[in-house]
Amino acid sequence: MSTFKLVISTPDGNKFNDEAARLSVRGTEGDLAVMAGHIPFITAVKACDCSIIMPDGTEKKAHTDGGLLTVSSDETTFLSSAFGWIE
Image (tube, rainbow, N blue to C red; front, side):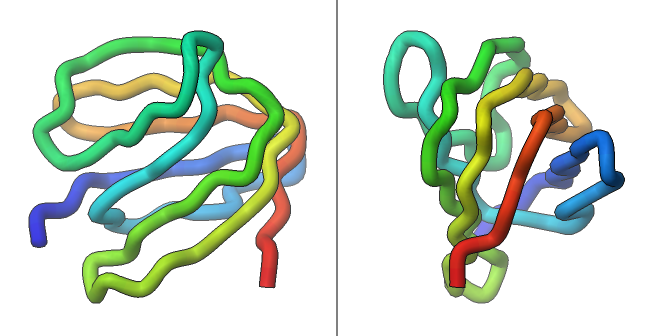
């Protein structure tokens, strides 16, 4: 499974800084997923439950109050005012 570098940051520090296979969030235009090789872009993210698929296929779920998602060729960064893991 191809992976990409994902960093999720809040004012309290990094909540995630590792490789991921997929990130799913709700953008201003609807649900979206980022995977390895995605074209570069920037979008606002709405408050939502999001999921991260790890390289081993396991899923981590979290809730975010929204923020800014930046996808570049070498890293995907999600800046959020609040981000909490759902168990």
